[in-house]
Length: 143
Image (cartoon, rainbow, N blue to C red; front, side):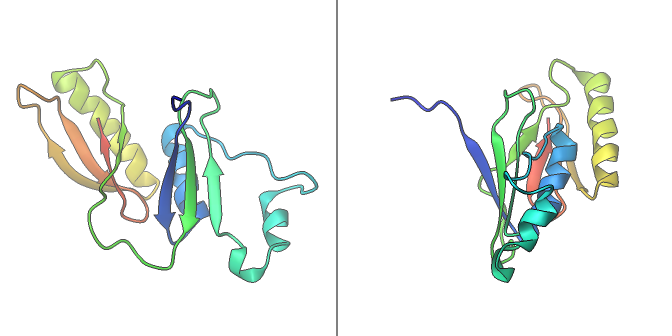
C-alpha cells in the first residue's frame, strides 16, 4: 500500500491565527463551514467552550499541496523544529535574481507577522535560502 496524501500538522497556541498566516503565505484556503452553519464563527459558538477555536485547517485550492492542520496545545514552543516547511519562491533562480526573490517574499511575510532570520548564501553546493519564523516562532525557509 502506498501513501496517497499527507497532512502537515502544526501544534500552536492560536490555530486560526497561525493557519490564516499560512493561508496568506501559500495561497491556501480554509474549507467551507460545516453543513448547517453560515460561518466558522457560527460553528465555533456552538462548540463547548474548551473546544472553541481548538483547530483550524486549510488546503491548496489546486489540490496539489498537502492539507495543513493547526491544533491548539497547552505548551509553548521550546526548541527548534525537527521538521519545517521550505517555501519555494526562488526555484530555478540563481545569484542576484534569487536573492531579490527571497528578499521580496521576506518583506511580504514580515508584513504578515513573520520574523526574518539568517540569510544563507549559496556555497557552490546549495543555493541561497533565508531562515524565517512564522507568527508563533515556527521555523521555515524561503528557498
